[in-house]
Image (tube, rainbow, N blue to C red; front, side, top):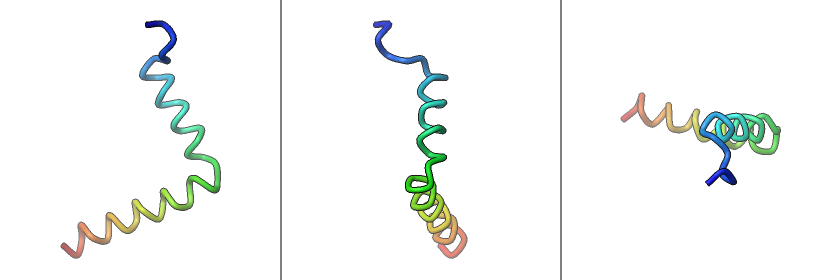
Length: 41
């Protein structure tokens, strides 16, 4: 069971990956689009 990283480790890994421009740009775009849909919907 020790092979899996802790929840904090998973969050840190996700944040590290999200900071990469190729990942951050589409992710930010999706969040923006979701926000627009919520406001308009």
